[in-house]
Amino acid sequence: MSFKAAFYQGNRTVTTGACEPVEPGAGQVRIRVSHCGICGTDLHIWHGAMDKRVKMPAVLGHEMSGQIDRLGPGVEGWQAGDPVTVMPLDFGKNPPPGHSHVADFMKFMGIDSPGAFQSYWTVDASTLFRLPQNLSLAHGALVEPLAVACHDVRLGRVQPGEHVVVIGGGPIGMLVAMVAQHAGGKVIVSEVNPFRVAKAAELGLEAVNPVETDLKQLILDRTEGRGADVVFEVSGSRPGAAVMTDLLRIRGRIVIVAVFAFKPEVDLFRFFWRELELCGARVYEAEDYDAAIRIAAEGSLPLDKLITETTDLEGLQAGFEKMDSGGECMKILVDVRA
Image (cartoon, rainbow, N blue to C red):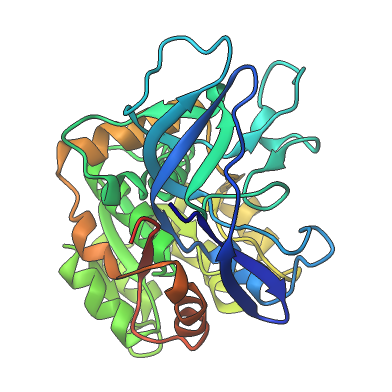
């Protein structure tokens, strides 16, 4: 039986070749990987922006699902064949109590260590989350980005009936919008890409192009002049950072989801004048994984429509190129078993 992995080689190049599965040590399991999504962070690495951090040739990938293949010594509560996903955060052997997911020492699996674009992935059993039998492994690979959205919406404290604006309609933006709507929010997505605007409608979301529609006036009209309750900034753009404060009611809330590549200009006077709140949101915690798995298993979100393409490991390079071109894609999954 041949075992394969995709290797990031630098210079926007991914190759596919043979790999040797790692035997699980004490407290570890080996997973036969089923599906793995291409994340925006993976694309960022492919661009070369993190070459000083990754060790090439690097096996990327962290949005995954699979089944346990082998248990290491001392692992209890799991057995071969169990469907699982992984929360890809490495807190070290003795993490301090509290919010370790935002600590400087935290390492990210699939970036700082090998990831899931390979036939078998050996990880600490402590990173596992059990997937319900009624959840497909393809949808199981969406749990990680869905957990990001659950974390964001939880920190944004979205309540039923509240008006929510999501700036940026990429995969994470769409998931944030879907989870916020699932929580009872009245959601509008702001997005300039026509394909993504149309995709939002397929997902049951309302989306507008702010180049064509006066977003601020639309929100004021919808809220009788008060403004939105919550804004999620997911675009990482200068226009997004500039407009987010204009959309909010008094004591409205902003959640920063995007990773900005620059220091944007923000209207701090507006924060003072309206007593606005600003919250950063980084990855997730265990309760967000639990929530994501529960929501995904409910079947209430149209996750199938979020997946615009499924390829194999050999198609990973083409997947990166398609995402980089701004083509008509949302979430590209890699069927690692194919």
